[in-house]
Image (cartoon, rainbow over all chains, first blue to last red; front, side):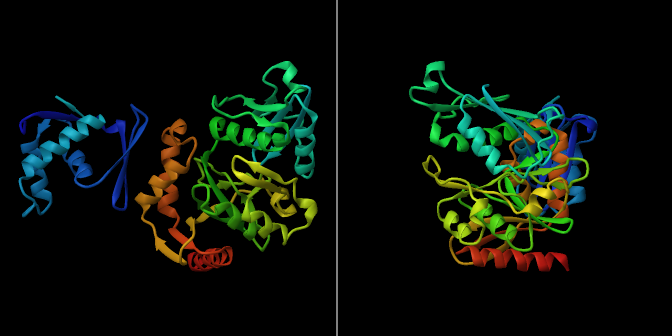
Length: 93
Length: 288
């Protein structure tokens, strides 16, 4: 499932506000507030406009963050992407 | 409605109608010093009505209604008409108000700055605010605080303070008995007695204040202060708001701004004196 591709929400759809340990995300489309923790905001920020899969995202995140010792980053990102899709914050492409 | 009155509490203009004279007379006594603004349209209407016409005389029982009706609102006996009217006023504001983000929180102010105390029933926020309001603080409200989405300012909602159980004796010993309403014994929330806020709280109810300290009190246990992160304060305040979802992005803006700008603490206290001392201490530190 790691190769499933997802598309980020259009930039104007979400308000992403870091609040200390939590990040509050307001989705203008659903008028819902989501509270998430790392690495959700980082994954969303790394997505860009084009559809991407967990492997691509893991590579982008590894370029920005020290992920050594974090385990199977690709599998973790794939799982988090599924959760973000359940929240409606990303959509399967 | 056979009997009615108008009451202005902060920015909210209430019209209260009743099938009976008693609750209206009790409200008029409690809110005698508040403006009436008969010329302005009412923002919220509360109706106290008999279930069936003949019940008005047979087994008087007050149902609460209004612009928004909560289906499971229990009918109360007529002797509780004042409580029903107060509950109705709270309900109409909690469910219907859209101009401000409504926090289920008490607030007190010094000058143009306010402390907001947010907590569930039994946290003691109402008693703490009432006691501070008898000192050199201006009571902004014991139940609701209104937050303007654009400016982030807090607006007062100083309805009559609803003193419950032990708080009745604690306040009754300090205030002029003329400021106390009738004792409503054995209500669903225990004994209740209303306290008319100090003249200053009523006269200055339209003055906004800048939130400067956010406290989450808990009555019981040793005195303790725990700084609270922005995220936790945000979560707690979304839970404490009755109209956060209805306000949409404006509510999101108001709350993110509040938790970022204002220091927040959870406090525990064993008695009112320690609670008040903690508020004063944290206020002094926040002012530095």
